[in-house]
Image (cartoon, rainbow, N blue to C red; front, top):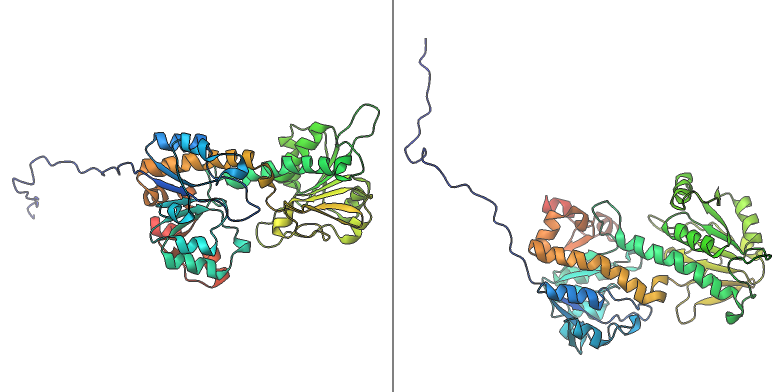
Length: 402
């Protein structure tokens, strides 16, 4: 019978040892730069003075280019009193470690960026070119698109928030162009006693369609909602507290009859990838009542009306077949102050969290939902979709931080 084997320990190994704990990262002071938007259509600000004050009270520095908030009706004085530093050139702003803006940076702005900077802005992938990504990669920046950042529930808060604004605003725009004030046919969008209510057709039952329907119903209009998805139509009815409302899966003949009778048509279909499907033909538009109003919210993805053409905030409408067409992308900029509040409510907590955890690297490591917005990390492309679309080398972000 073999003798049992015993493990031997030295006296030092038997002594109590110190426990090794992870060293928590210390809070990081952020230096945030907000340049003035160079795109003429963009009037929103990513941070309001209230958000700047909150960040300043937590020890962060905010640098803002003079008159950056003018179109959202925020003065330099508003930001200065909130604790921001006002500078008089974009070059000074781009000296900051982190750049926050609404529109993607222009070529001139990318030239001002420095190695190791962090950029948080919209991406608007469908309007980007390969050169844009190569320029940012060359600069060695870390870039996040805020329209892809998710919250803890998997919702994309910026897209949802701007869609809510676009849905509400689309009905108010239609009401404006139905009235005599803009050479409309003199209708009140809604209903009064003894007068037939306005007929509104909404194509798309997503967030834009839901909020458009809610606003139109609140004004007293008759509303019909069409969508290709039955589940979206059911969800819309549920979100409207099961108020009786006409809903229908898109069928060309039924849709055409509804459009012939309507006074307002809202295009609210959103494509997950590529161009928005064109579900309303020119013949359908031609058969609509003269003076009716089309608001094509889907125009930023090509539009769901065949007769739609891109317009601007300066010249927002055109007439075709005697139908008023409003086809301005970025409708949220029409109500820039409300949109700025909404953006700021999303961005400020993210920035505070970045400071609390010790910087953008720690934030990306700890929070996968924020990582959803990452497309460049220190000059390396991390988005599979962008890499395959533009034939650029990439390494998926999750692999870098897991």
